[in-house]
Length: 405
Ligand code: PMP
Image 1 (tube, rainbow, N blue to C red):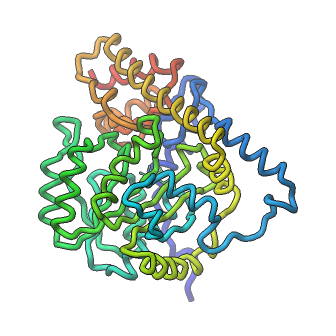
Image 2: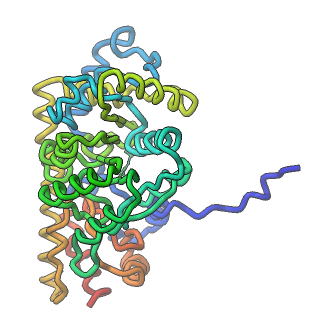
């Protein structure tokens, strides 16, 4: 007879486990630099005013009107899907105009990625390797493995330059078996904060084409990187213009601050409208037995914000204010490290893009920060810059200097 006592305890999630430890810590100056969620300069979560306004308008429509709680279809809310792909692709490659996108609302970025991997497993083949950057967001690996895919990595980050290993990346794209799957972060690479330049993206694009590789793009930070959602979509749009039939997973967790609402969009570029319809029919067949249909509330909020010109404009400036605060904190962290007398080169702190700073601190130093200074970050030295404020940056710089001098 099977009994549950045969099941061993699994390890805590490396990022979410850190939160538990932080919550138990009673030290007054403790700092949480683990999970990638935006905080304001008082260290508090922030609901964007444009999001609050959209939510208010939805409720004002009345419980029997637009605000009913009926199921969405398998692929979610149409207004959201339309607005979401326009937000990402713009007019790139005329894919929207020509009806060449298969689109489904999904459970945020994780759900979009997992759906993409399930699609590859079923229609491309579990034996076709999927290449991910080394390093990548920790959850990418089990997401692909649980879908049964054959996981490989490509070189991405160069420890010595604290930047992109562009030659290594190109070599790995070139040496992979023709027709492999390559996953990229569309902008604000997590955890390194290192992105290719647009010129480098162009070279990557032509190599990918030469090798007939498939492209999966994970876009969890559109707008969050530069503060301008169009700027952050440049790589994606260039790849589409260049003729790649990409799969894209968009998340609205960070840029709209809708983390727990689980708002995301899956889209796949097809060769024709007819092909897109066929793809969508299969995507529905994948979704239906997994979770039937996606949650409605957050998607309605995003659709309301994106489709109302005034709210849309307001959102752009709110998103920019989040990106700007993070960029300011990067500068403050670097200058405070210098004030502490650190002679290490901290240029990467200001050069890196997006929510994270790949600090270069080693696991021993990360442990000392936790044990001696009550500062929590992942073992790989990744700092969530959103946890840094004008009030704690001095203490953080002091501690970082003490453990790294
Ligand atoms: N991709 C990357 C690179 C991420 O950093 C995240 C969030 N940490 C996600 C995807 C997905 O997050 P969510 O499922 O909350 O949208």
